[in-house]
Image (cartoon, rainbow, N blue to C red; front, side):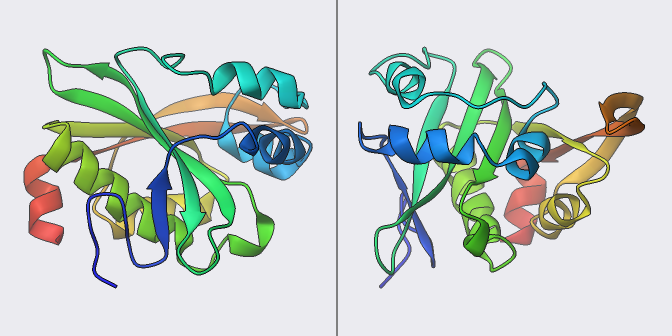
Length: 182
């Protein structure tokens, strides 16, 4: 099957459904996932809290959120978002999470990155997409660099995990860099 705006080689960008809330609630109990996803403290969330988050219009006009479903069996495996969009500056921030452990490190994240960046640059007409990642997440940093993200700086010792401090790496990709890597 050919790639389209919402379909990559392994995943498709899908809207949220009410049934997704239970899956997201289960993922919120995976400490490794939650601690790599965000710099905030990890805590489990209820399905009800996700139902509220998935309500239409909840993300507002400056964010686009997709749920990731496998092409093979339509299984929900994660999410991707372009958020904090500044339309006047044509910039936004990327967030991605593969919640299903068996789908990490198998190309689903890379396929998602290519798909979401294509959406950001071709559909949303952004000029720059940025992100930040905790320095101890080497696998994510490598994936971001493979699709063309450049390291732009580090917030030193900005994250505390298990008594150890880590930097927060700031990365970005510009439209022309994305087009050169296509």
